[in-house]
Length: 303
Image 1 (cartoon, rainbow, N blue to C red):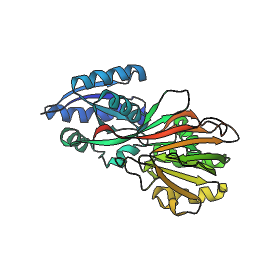
Image 2 (image 1 turned 90 degrees about the horizontal axis):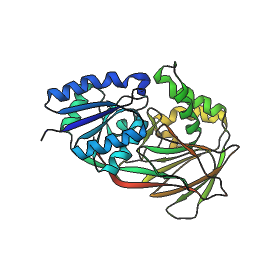
Image 3 (image 1 turned 30 degrees about the vertical axis):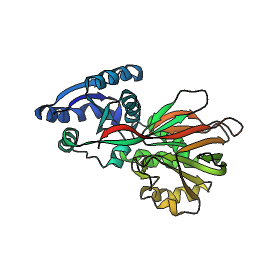
């Protein structure tokens, strides 16, 4: 049976590249006999309503944008019991990279039309007293959250340079935090660290292989702790994160689990991000911790 599709486009993704990217793929799908509806994202609340309606019709919801758009739609599609497709058109496209999805219009259309549905895990982030947020790739705190916020403010920097420049700037102004990390109910451990990443996907930050062992359908999360080091050492070792060899450094600890508790004290409250989007700040060490939990097989996806 031919699939039908509802494309939800973030017009700001990729510096405005998303609307242009959708045109050839939609044309190829229609030529292949599929019904295609294209809607530009009107905001999270309205987008959730569009997802629910599309899933009720049996449409595949296609995220046209970057990792932030993908994560928001992944949660909405999962709750609606639908299927998600991807048209990578953002700055990073790291979850698409993790799935090995193509970038050319013909290959994207073929993937959407022919690829079997698979189940992948999602990540639940919950700070005490706040609503749950679902994320596809990773939740992170420390230097990387500062870098992600800087990338969002870059308008004229070439896309391929945004993440490396932001990472160096974030390192130049960082102060280590005191993190408390608990795994699956075991006694929490404390670390003086520059960053902590809880990862479902191996990649973030436009191709940085931050969690090399991560697998999106194993029901586990990989926790990467980069302990405090000098700014010079962090900058010197930054290139190693692109091939994943940073995990061999003595300063890096890799843990695995299903339910991760996180709290931290810093010079100021430590920012948290998820797939390029801000998630607030971590609770302090004297407060009830935030919880990051894997939701095994929560999302049906083409890829």
